[in-house]
Image (cartoon, rainbow over all chains, first blue to last red; front, side):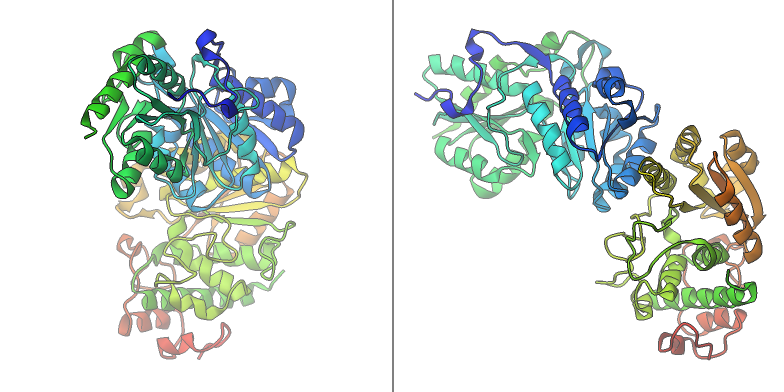
Length: 328
Length: 288
């Protein structure tokens, strides 16, 4: 029977976890960069408190630029800033950047290969009581279709900090997706993190659960429950949606023979879509996608919404049983 | 400062190259390229600090073309200034060309940003101006917009930003030819009083004759003296200027002159008599 990999250096989440919003990791990453990379400037659109860029505004005011509630302008301004050698991190909620400023990201930034970093906060239905207007569920497909874009969905605050610091070292556009709510911190400073490489956290040969964002934790909990039923699940943290770690995914499909993906986003075109595109061409196996089933969310508490819209550990385990039943 | 008579002759040749390049391409935007010719010539011959040998020279002034469809005038100017060989002009819009149908910064020396989706250039230019200021670089940033483009909301977002951050190193030019694809700007989506709008946004504004090289150069000089506000030059122009059958005709916004008789007539309006294809074989100064 497989178990958590030693080299993953995860916290012992079975004994309880601390919950921290991944946006905090972004804020800490930005503070580190402001201290260590003179090229970095931090841009915001009147959401400094909520996106944690206020930490930069308070400590490094000379590195902070507020563009007001004008996301389209902010994204193209960042493109201009980047051409003068600065490395701008633009920050707002996912819906207002990936949606509203998509054309600026497409034509000015991605087509022009500009060195702009985008921090998209409030991704996922767990944004909660603010409701569907603020629950960004579509950034993964919107961003991953753009040539040259790198798209990372960190699983927790530690990983968010690492991804933020990495983004400054990379030449080219990067989108980082963060949630609003406190989510279980399962990784540590020592947990391996390489953009473009999916990490196997738990070994197993009956099924592979490939997840991103806070649902990696749900996948681990699901795997523990499945183990009690004799199902040995491999759990993979696929934090980088683009470029996708095709090798790890295809290997998992070959060795496990069934795959379930899990993400806090629309089921169309997201992580599940990426994995399906790869597997149907390289190694088709029974597969299910856990995510939002083509509807908008509603107001509620984060936990209630994850339960209602089918993205908890129990939902993942149920899909696992479906694909296992399909294995011949 | 280059003599005005000489720049008038340069402008005539730039218009000639625009017509020949578009006829050869078989598609592209005539009207807004012809209207912006003196705006571009006065800037590139009298004002802009640039080095065609080293387009990324750190001490340069920047030129941003926001109305990307008018790239024929930019390409003609860049070729005449020596950014790339003139023969490239005759590859416009063709497979493997360095001159895309709308400008792409990674293909064409001297093109600072990729453009074509309207309403983004003022923000890009404002970002450059802000970046230069933050790093103590004295370079100036010029950005050419269309008047129809002023419909885009993001233009006004950038207008607020540039004023908020005192970007006195940013100079917008609005090619005010009063025509957009669907017709007269005031009938499609009224802009006037355009100058008052920009003043209300905190900008220094000049309204001038955009075909008068002296007025254009003077406005650019006044911009350079301003120490506080961004500047907007509203250059009143004639769409299709210089080619009789294109002047003030919205239909020539996105159409080229046809090869043969039609482009020959256009060249005739500009005072050239040699067969149109001969201009592809000679240098910029050759007039037939």
